[in-house]
Amino acid sequence: MNHSPSLEITDNIPLLKVKNDLPTESAKEIYHLAVLCRDETESSRRLASPVVKQISEHKLSRMGLPKSLGGWENNPVETLKVYETLASAEASAAWIVWNNHLACTFGRYLDEASLKEVYKDPSHLYANSARPEGIAEVVPEGYMVSGRWSLVSGCELADWFVLRCLVISEDSPKTLGPGANLKLFFIPKKEIEVVDTWNVGGLNGTGSHDVVIKCAFVKEEYAVSFDSPVTIDSAYNRLPIGCINSAGCAAMALGVLKAATDDLVQMCLDRVTPGKNPDLRDRPTVQAAISKSKTLLASKRAQLHSSVNTLWEESQNRNTFTDEQLADVWAASCEAAREARAMVSEIYAVAGTSSLYKKYKIERAHRDIHAILQHGILQPHWMNQAAMAYVGLKPTGAMFRI
Image (tube, one colour):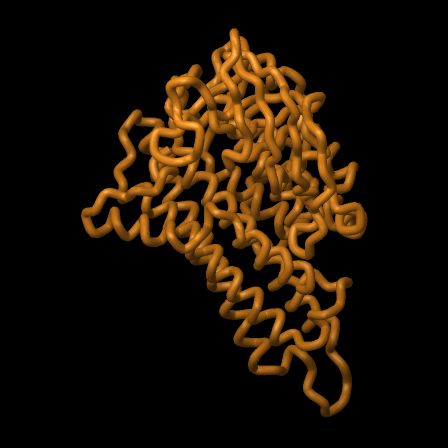
């Protein structure tokens, strides 16, 4: 299929609109709208409605699904580019798209009829929590689910939720720990109560409130686990969930860094004044930060994309991923995000008092990137897990291979 012209993520989001089916082109179209709606997203503590509408219409919320249900089902590097592009406009927009991808990815474990039922409506959005903060009691033909889950991003926007619970039965442990029976439950929004708890700085627009369920019946078919059979055998559904999710989070961090870098460059271009006093662009610390950031962005992006592309090639060939290949993605993700955070903090410092003003992207970027790196999928222990693979040990992280 010809796409003319073909566009990659560059230092400047192109204004040109290209009609094709690449998710990155959709992300570039949404970029400017997300920028225009930044104030609404921030003040309402949820993604602005026009942005939500465009994300849904462009099917960016469904990238993790099979193509028959509107998904991408091709090289996952494309999804990383989407996250980076959206995050460079509005980190909360990227975060919602990324969370929807995970919730859709969990659908691989549903039987075919349930998969089609849960994801049948193209306008639907999804939310999830992999933290086992609920209880599911075994009853005839299904489960009775209750619980309260924190940090459920996009919960006010979602039509379906995928929530993890401890399953309670006569022959299973009643508490979390060894042998605990954990499952993911697909639950419609009518069973969900949103509790307004999301009063934060970074990622303020994600609406990551708590959700509560009180005795909701969930039928057997809508309860799955990470060892459930995968209904549709495709290269995309063979990709590991854990490290691909980590790579997506890292891509968002790079997008936030790009926003801060672009903002600092624009400040330099706007503040050229006559006279003998040096301008912002004349400061050695500013010059060094810009060069360092652009180099870091290019190198970390390349490493991240390369490691994920390797998994894609192996998946297409039906090969088993080695621990070293998985470690490459985990390590590239964690290090890209960590260095992006450090670089945003450096930009925040060298920009001086301008960094304090909300009219500049740098101020929000500094808040958002620190929030992004609070996610468990980017915590330092994943670097230890990766190193275990490199030195011949067996990584023990529960999500390392899933």
